[in-house]
Length: 326
Ligand code: XMP
Image (cartoon, rainbow, N blue to C red; front, side, top):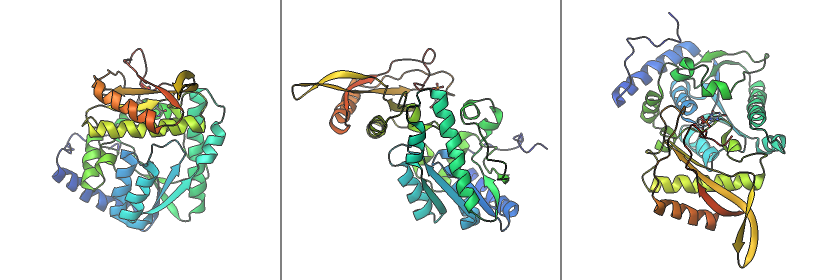
């Protein structure tokens, strides 16, 4: 039987009990598959890799080595949360790589979105491969492949995040959630004790904030995107919208506009708020966000984010617009 085909007899994981049964079964299978060998995992902190990490830590503890690459394009608080949850709370063998300068130096002056994506993807693999080469006796590579990735091998993840490890790094694969749908992965993650803001997280692109700092990435705009995104997420959560709106974030285009501060004209960035509802990202609608909330977010961005003098709300549906700006 093709191990990449979900058997018809496989029950949908819809309850904590079923999630627990899945976890028990996988723990056994992983132990059988891996034996005493070492396993390596690129842990981004996204739902899929986080669930695989938690599952493997439960099954084989520190036989798993997690590598978390901070490419500087993550959301505020993400690297810290990965370290807190996996290293401090779960006792994982976690290698944290601060590659921020490396990525930002490579991306300097690069305007074209697809070139930016390629640089980020290629450098990510390069950094991960460097870490992998330092480790001895690794036999398996764990991956957070999920069933939609297999079904839609022409889909967004495959389309945007192409690339494999270099020839000298040959590992057998360990993909314990590859037959699960996203809602099942979340159910398993919840049962494994991962925090809600990790398990029910909105989609986040591989190139991260890099595609939300439109055009050539500059450090000031990147920080402003990160700070304004954190404010938006916090205010959406406070307003009870976090699990309601499918995806929401801020964008800073590569143009300035005129403002006024302390009686003087300013030339500063603009923050665009983007919020969309979607089922599978192929089309998207724009939810009605209360003006009161938008005004509150604007006030906080004006007060807390440097170099911004204008806040806009994007009304564009997909099509004609895409969800991201580039
Ligand atoms: P668009 O902008 O194409 O986005 O309407 C559809 C969905 O895909 C996400 N997206 C990406 N995900 N790598 C990813 O892993 C990427 O390069 C990428 N670009 C867009 C986007 O956030 C939305 O959920």
